[in-house]
Image: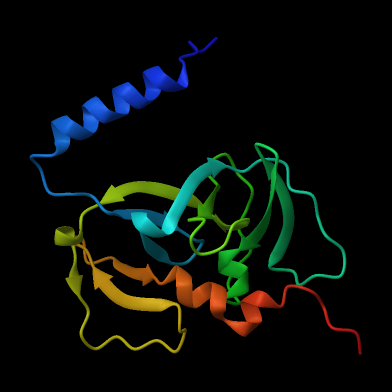
Length: 172
């Protein structure tokens, strides 16, 4: 059985680790993956990253709207980020994660990703100059040292997109 620690101990440990790492380059980007794309999210736009809890489906919604989850007494919408963009559905495996957006954007919105792959520094990437993408929630296209393409997510633009706000199916 895993050892339980208090929230105060966790915060103290986290503060100590952050202080130790302050001499290195700041890691301000969270790396996440969908089945077909790599994404970066500025930490200021994130709330939490969690393993996927039980999702309760909501009838009469688009297929990309997976349903609702209860996160410590707060209901959060779960949007399959890949499927919202007409990509492959995200499998609910052990590596799947939901990203709760920062409350300053909107409370109760979470995005489903295939996996979280850690924190990254902006210095690890170069800008891909010729990239153009029509999706308004892409702030920038970046490339890492392994030549993998990463898309920088603009959370504010995403949650203002009319299609994103219309999870319910319209009656004919």
